[in-house]
Amino acid sequence: MDVPSLMRQAMSFNRERTAIITEHETLTFAQMWDRGVRLANGLRELGIRPGDRVAGLEDNNLGAADFFLGAAIAGAVRVPLYPRNSAESHAHMVEHTGARVVLSDVAYADSVAAMDSMIPGVEHVVIRDSGYEQWLKEQSDVDPMVEVEPDDWYIIRHSAGTTGRAKGVGYTQQDWLVNCRNWFYRLPKLRWGSVVGHAGPISHASGYLFLPTWLHGSANLLFGEFESAKVLDMLQSHRVTHMFTPPSMVQMLAADASARERELPELECILVGGAPITDATARAGRDTFGDVLYQVFGQTEAVPLTIMTPEEWFGDVSGSTPMRAAGRVFPFVRLETRDAEGVRLPLGVEGELYAQVESQMRGFWEDDELTDARIVDGWIRTRDIGRIDENGFVYILDRVDDMIVSGGFNIWPAELETVINDHPEVIEVAVFSVPHERWGETPMAVCQVKPGAKVTVEEIVELVRERLGSYKKPTRVEFTNDPLPKNVVGKLLRKALREPYWSGQEKRVSGA
Image (cartoon, rainbow, N blue to C red; front, side, top):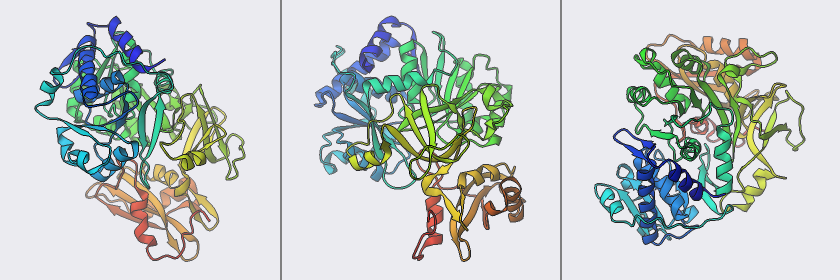
């Protein structure tokens, strides 16, 4: 199976049905396919042939849908860029993948405009400015019917880690189809009248839902730039049934003064993923929208690994604590914990999570050494530390590299962050290691709080001591009204906060 042939078939079955909804227009499958065909032919006129890489930098708009279809129809390998990234990061991803053409929204033109003269291999930069629609109309409307094979590359997504340069993860046509199909296995079923809203960008995580929605003949709705009031208006007016969103957007939607007054009877599923969610945000989302919150966990390298329904997430399950879990193991996944030597551990014992899932990555793009380190006998080393209970709930403790070793005890920052986030005056928190004369290193917490907050250091320390034990309590706590540093997908950059405290140290104790 390949993506373009199935997309073409879905279009033929649903020509006059609604395919794409944006802030400003609604397009049928036939109209959207015409745009995709014209973009594909435009790329071919620029020299793109099957297997060539094309990078795209856009918001969640009609241009993003053009690129999703056009690259597939041309047989090109799509390389999504992160709008929130730096120009340097864009250049790395483009050069690393050997992209020949770069497409960009006009809002990001400055960060890519000179790539065709500065990066070897980049031949054209196409900006979606005022002339884009005319350029598109000038391209041929004849479907090029490019043939691709199931094992041909389809997309190169980048794993946006919190340290080092992003790593390219390639998926084949067949792998991407299987991956996307799996996402809906434990979600409410799609119908012809379903409308799937994308609060997160379809260039990245939300894109896993875009293709199944198209193939089913349902409608994909692109909210554009996220504004809570606008998103709520569109949820209501377009009768959205499913939506993907990161936790930060759930928080903003639930906090909107008009949210609880909205009539949203068609809304069946808000799928939350991309970052950890606090108990407070999860409960606020449920209180506002009802029992429609689902949670997904995975990585660019292997996804989905877990999905949790509202019944499981907010239920009372003997032997489990669902509110602390990242979900239940997905039915088509093998997931286990292993020790530092790679030996499998019993259920309930914490260790590094190893995963096998249909359509997992085949390797990092042009990096055999890293591939060999992360794929062991067909298993993906996730580099996440966690445990799995007897009901299949998965608890993520932290990243391997962020572990704090204090006085011989292993402490996971994310575990402390979850507890501290429960304080009503804490907006967000980052926990990381700082040097300690006696213990080698100990946890420090930096908390973003509301202006005028009365929370004290003693309250935070006591909260952790009571919930997790004395040896895990932070020895330093600082408060700020400023947002904490994050990477482009919203993950905390603990390293940026941690490094000043280790400046001049001869040795890092962590992990010893």
